[in-house]
Amino acid sequence: MPVNEISARAISRRNMIKMLGVGAVAGAGLTACAPGGSSTTKSLGSASPSAARGEATLWFDDDDVLKVFKTIVPSFNQKYPNVKMNLVGVDVSTKLAPTLISGTGVPDGSYTGDGGALAQADQLYDLTSLMKPYTSDTVQYKLDVNTVNGKLVGIPWDTDPGLCFYREDILSASGVDPTQLTSYDALLDAARSVKAKYPNSKPIPLEQDPALGMQWLLMLVNQQQGSGLTDANGKLTIDTDAFRTALTWIKQIVDEGLGTRCKFASTSQIAEADNGTISIVPWAIWFNFLVQSALTKSAGHWRVQQLPAWTAGGARSGVMGGSSFIIPVKAAQPDLAWLFYEHALYSAEGIKQDFGPNTIYPDGLNTALPSVKSALEGASLFNDLPQLGNTSLWDVAAKSSLAIPPGYHIPTWFDQAGTNYLGPNLQLLMDGKMSVDDVISKSASDITTNLVDRS
Image 1: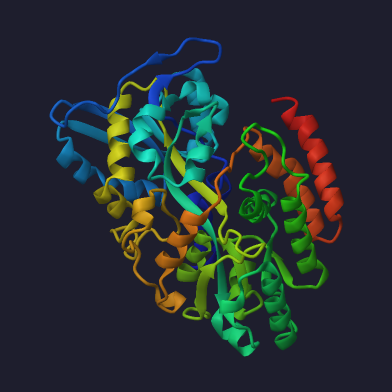
Image 2: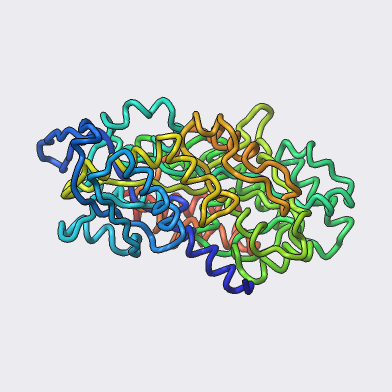
């Protein structure tokens, strides 16, 4: 596959910006709630397999995730033979919100990036009671991002933990022991050692897309304080020690010439990762998509381990992405949508078909992991990859998913912050044109004035 085709697929497959926390939310218990109105309770999931019947339509982005979920339909129909599931590919990011608002042509359920439908939460079922049997077995941050005013409006699907990818050949030649990369100071020292050995190298990638760059920053922040841009009460958390620490670390990379400015999955990033300019990548698990699909010259030299910690004993994981499913209040067959999601996301059979080897991904859907703790604690669903030296990506990533700090919340204005305020200011810092203090003060002020106060 040509490099430009790899890049396009990498972005469109997960629709990276959207999927990283800018998607839609869906709910639980099945109480439909409208602002200022009364709620009505609707019992879902209580029907026996023989009683469940009818036809339901579920929306997905028109990509390989849709193809994967279509492979689950036959096992679902073994449980519910009288139910027909229509899985349809649409542009969820542009179609879901206006459809929920108009109430016309509403699907029975939809895929969405975490947080994307929060502004329309009153158009979604409260799934709190339906999810009750599963909440204790669900990674907490996935419940947090799908909760609005105490109501669970999204059914968690995947976790996207931050991991540390590195070139073992380059680190070894530079005298770096990867097992010692347990702190972010140690990661900087490793980058310095690599640059000393290879003067033209710039080991750590510095993302040039404002929205995606903000997502990366929030991964580093989530490690430290749990929350991202806001806390559980909606209070802005930019002027905090966690943001200052992460931004200061990024500025050190810039000041010492240890970073490569590039866009994720771009032709330049692929070339620089292949030729050794880039060799240390603290990034989401889905960097693995490039390792196994696009990096040809360096195949077999990449390895992966948990992120470093910011403090001794601190979290060695952070969130950088995720998606869920929602059930609209105006769905014609919400019960059937729930039954499908329950099977696909919370049954052992569904999880294995979803994330394990399948006709779409022969080695497993190894750019994300389940949100279900028991699955993460169980046997590997991924095949070991020769591109990673046959080390177990599952063991590292599952441990990291379980360790993602709770408390992450996604405000309705998240996209605008990434596109217009914090995202561009971070770019200026990475270009050496803005200080840490200015990024914090200007971003906090502009977001408060233009987003928080208007929401």
